Image (cartoon, rainbow, N blue to C red; front, side, top):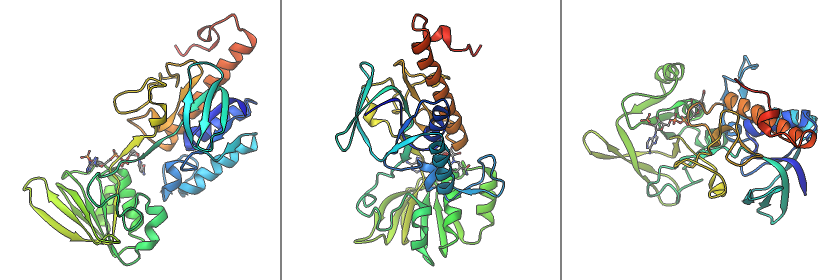
Amino acid sequence: MHSKIVIIGSGPAGLTAALYAARANLEPLVIRGLQPGGLIATTSEVENYPGFPESVGGFELAQKMEEQAARFGTKYMDALIESVDFSHRPFTLTTDGGEQVTADTVILSTGASPRKLGVPGEEELANRGVSYCATCDGFFFRNKRVVVVGGGDSALDEGLFLTRFVDELVIIHRRDKLRADPILQERAFANPKVRFVYDSVVTEVLGDDKVAGVRIKNLNTDEESILETDGVFPYIGHIPNTQVFTGHIDMDDGGYILADERTRTNIPGVYAAGDVVDQIYRQAVTAAGDGCKAAMEVTWFLDAEEHVPQKTQEEVVPSTA
Ligand code: NAP
């Protein structure tokens, strides 16, 4: 299978890239990956994506993006990319099913995954009380007590979603100041179901066949205590899903792909967009903006090759200066 442009990942970055590439008649192929729709599809309510004054469900938003890109000719493949060869063009991508896809250009938009606590019991009790998706699993915790770990937007946003179901939500944060938006902080402070445990970390998830509690350590006093709980939702940031590209493209020490402000990586014809490059903003709308830029860059790049092969990309692409 060959495509002029293959987009790896189907979050807001990948789907916006697909929309723009499709409208440029490039017939893009999107490799959906492990989490179709990306992280936004696991988000309960999205209140800050322009155009949705009443807010929109994350899954619904992702679906709308997918449909919009499909309308102009985007094709989708449900697969994971297991290896890449960027050493020569066309680039070769191999899926988990052993299928080889070749591409004239590639946009890397594989996003990021929730960071794990890395404590005993977390892995053993995953899906048995430990969850990284309040939207998916909140319902199972009706009238229970659950713990959310973290003090950022995700912790408060998803925690507040959980209060629709649970009797008590305990937010455990390693400092005494939250990182989350003031508006989310106000809502959490005003919610009678929410309680905060500050200056503390979870050191162990307890339970035999399902979560029964967490061991907590106070970082000021080193004192340990046990809190009984039915669920643990870690929301302590993300790590970029770039392991498969290691050694094939320039990255920083944290595994983020290095791309310039025009989404170009060190390999001509390979672009990167969204959470794989962004350590600062990490919003659906900034990822979508990146995806748009990457698709426009691809269009100019292919156009330059097709119509004016004697010119370099720099000479053909409009200057941003
Ligand atoms: P984040 O902003 O990086 O926050 C991670 C939180 O986890 C921080 O409070 C951090 O503590 C804590 N943390 C990190 N490592 C930890 C560890 N090992 N143990 C205990 N706690 C740890 O991540 P996020 O909340 O997932 O947000 C990511 C991005 O998505 C942000 O840009 C955010 O604005 C965006 N987002 C936006 C919305 C929204 O607009 N509604 C919703 C979700 C996410 P410290 O504070 O001490 O560093």
